[in-house]
Length: 264
Image (cartoon, rainbow, N blue to C red):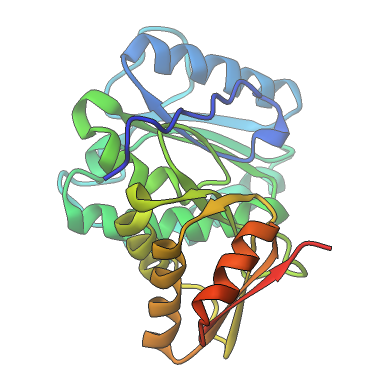
């Protein structure tokens, strides 16, 4: 469960730097206002823009009905879904656009645990795709429909989130690690951390490096969860560029599968 103490990271940057954003919205008007701002910024720079939702918008937006692409209750194939957007991005560029920019209300695709498991894995994979390709997206989730805990399972797989989430596991430059781990890891985050690591499908290696310069805090229980994840897979996890407090705690615990390297 995600504690109410975790405040959302409010993203009001509609430019290309927005990258991959998770938006938890409270009503249709708020979603459509954010979509107009975000898509207009893309159109101004020559991007192809799309608004994907089950309901037709009440304001002018380049709408594509969600139901045309996803049957009710479908569980997506994460890798196939990335391939769909990669192909759409390539097509947009081939026809003269500078890229593809999408706002998608995918609430109906994540209502069940099985759906969220698949979609969270997709969110992590597309987060790895976006930094090196001209594709920008807001993934939108209805808070009243799903609740904060369900949305947190998905928000933590985004590089940016406008949702209540204690931490994020997201893409980073390959030279820095397999992924970045940012935020705070305390008892409210334990179960979510375990689920997120399982879903992320991190690149297989004997040593998996997580860039931890944005990890503000981690308690002993969280470090033990990461240790268990590494032990189950017979690997070593490295938290690189972590703060001194995390490093000292890891040293005290004497962990064998988790190594913490402090920032220089």
